[in-house]
Length: 320
Image 1 (spheres, helix red, strand yellow):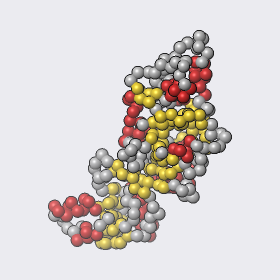
Image 2 (image 1 turned 90 degrees about the horizontal axis):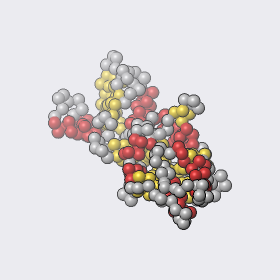
Image 3 (image 1 turned 180 degrees about the vertical axis):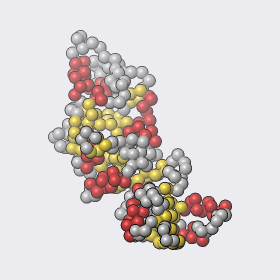
Image 4 (image 1 turned 45 degrees about the vertical axis):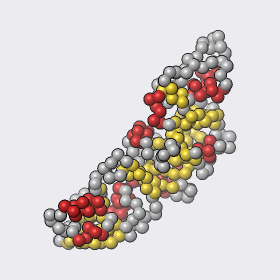
């Protein structure tokens, strides 16, 4: 079974690093204390008084000691982590990333410090559950640690429940893929790819489909950034203008930024760079005004533009 973990990848000024990246590169996860969950109604169960029922005491003790690692189960029609709300709420509005786990490999870790107690599929209910003495142990734990209101149903959550909270070393091979958010920085993306390059992990870039509400995930490959053709140039004494047919596999913003940076490094003069993904624009890219039918072709195949006066900026077309 596949499950996803959306990560914000925030920079910790106090520690001087991105904690989510650190855990990822160290092959670790952090099981957070149960009382630190973001839902204030966690453990809102109906329990009798522990003074009259000693079986209640261990439950209340667990609330302070167990660790929780929450994930989102892959839905039947979900080919990649595409939940807009989870990207917004848990991945810092697409500035973070999402880890794809093989849930079976993740939970069946034989390390002694991986003190997993249960895997609980969250139940979403209208009313808080009543915990009774004759409940079986797992049913009791599901009510306390695995029940939420129906407002949270969109998360499709599954939880690893640990005996203790804190850092846990995960099993080799449990991580299958990393998905980078729409707005994740190139430097952060590259640090993860470099740090995990010796692992059997695939890397994907989340992108928008045109100006729709849809997302796609494109697999990142070892792009050959020399794979391009200059299809037009205009030179003057101050600025050179290049029109480029880009043949690289990945056409997301970070990949284009890398290409532009490499192109500028071998063309030191001030440059305006227009980048396309189809040679059909060659016949009309200098026309003015451009005919209506050619405007549509240009809009479809014009990837990006970078100007001489802002060389570190890449403007994607249409702007994402």
